Length: 283
Image (cartoon, rainbow, N blue to C red; front, side):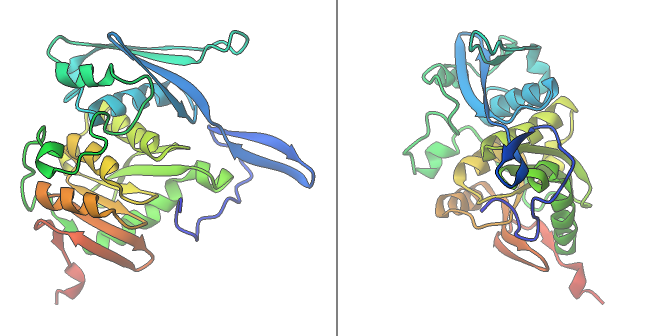
């Protein structure tokens, strides 16, 4: 599923990332899906993403590199440039990222083994949790706290943030919130990984403290998205759908908080790690 069923594509305004097509019974807005090259040193990776503005693509690249362990901080980026493509020559748009010498060389090398953006590149097929989590520092248990009542506030604000989904009904949304339920960043894209990368990349560029944030996902919480959040040091992940078994195991081992089936007035806690409080039961 993409998003909560109560959110339907009924908007008449065309947001960034949508395009109009003429149908037999009238016009309809469809989500755009176009190629983008991400260039990092000697690596060049291709992804299909929903284009928006230049900043969207740059933040997609930043979030992807953070989620792959190439970056740990925005100060490791020496430059980032967007180059518009050429439709006539079939040359896609490109984002070129310059890095300091101290960036994770092993992670950069891992990127060079593929010419297509794939989640958690180099980890495919691995189920040993020690291998999956070998690059992670332990999360601090119980920090930050999240009131379960706030989860419902986050859900409603998450639905309000999905402009592109309301117009097209065909994309994923990912967003970051603080523990008071305030929306910090949002990413929308035809790809669920790209949507999360955009939200994380925007937070990275704005120098937000990701260790104090809550991520919310419009689809299932697969282990690959969980790994992106953990590499960004995001300790709590909410999803409108269920997690996979491996996502559960990763969160349990890493000390992350995982809540699925976040729907109206209900949610299912899979892992807690001491962060959740329920003020609704207090006198």
